[in-house]
Structures are given as structure tokens and as C-alpha cells.
Image (cartoon, rainbow, N blue to C red; front, side, top):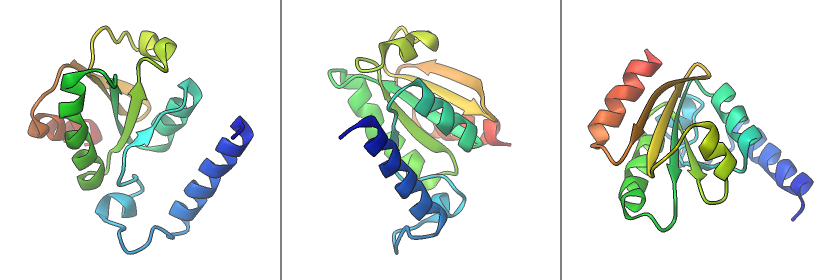
Amino acid sequence: MSDSDDIESIREQKKAQMMGDGGASANAAESAGAPADPIHVEGADHLGEIVQEYDVVFADFYADWCGPCKMLEPIAEDIAAETDAAVAKVDVDAHQQLAAQYRVQGVPTVVIFGQGEVAEQLTGVRDKTQYLDLIERVGA
């Protein structure tokens, strides 16, 4: 698939979400505009679009080989499903320049964006309630 095909596919998915074609599985997070599943970031421009589109973004910088990253994955999925925050997943091996841009020196690193700006940055796995508290504070 070419980049233009990928972009077109993303546009179609976004259009379907905006038109309310999410199906019966639509939940409170989707109705508030944030997807109920994590978004896999495809590059710096894509992350920028996500950060601009949603009020609060929980960006999980991870690596497939990282044990603690695997522990964070179900927490990130729950956050996507249960909150108004969009969850972005950034593979640091595939997007090394993006990780460097946000000064990610260890994984997992979570960057929480509020209103398009970095509001919090945490390295390591935290309890889900700590992430939820930060999201609520940033979104307030």
C-alpha cells in the first residue's frame, strides 16, 4: 500500500467516525470524539494531527521488546475506552526521530498533551488511577 492509499484509508475511517458509523460498540469516549481504541502513530505529522484534533492525548512511547511496555498496553487500552482522551501509540524503534524530539530516553514513556501542548511526561509504568488523575487534571 502506498502512502497516498494509507492517507485515503485514514480519511475514510475518520469520515465514518464523524458520520457516526461506529456501530453498536460506540461508547462514551467515542461519542465525545475520542476513539475507543489506541491510534498507532505513523510519523511526526500524524502525531501532530492527533494532538491538534483532540483536547487531551495520552501518547505511549513504547517498544515491542520492552516488558514494562507490555504491562502498560492494557492500561492504555482501558484509558482509550473509558476516557475522553485519545490514546496514541508511538513505536520508538520505528520512529526514533519522534522519540528524540520528545526526549524519550526510556520506555515506556507517556506524554500527556493538553490543548496541543505537552502537559506531563512520565517514564515507567504507573498505576492506572495515576494516569486517569493526570488526564482529568489536564482536561479540566
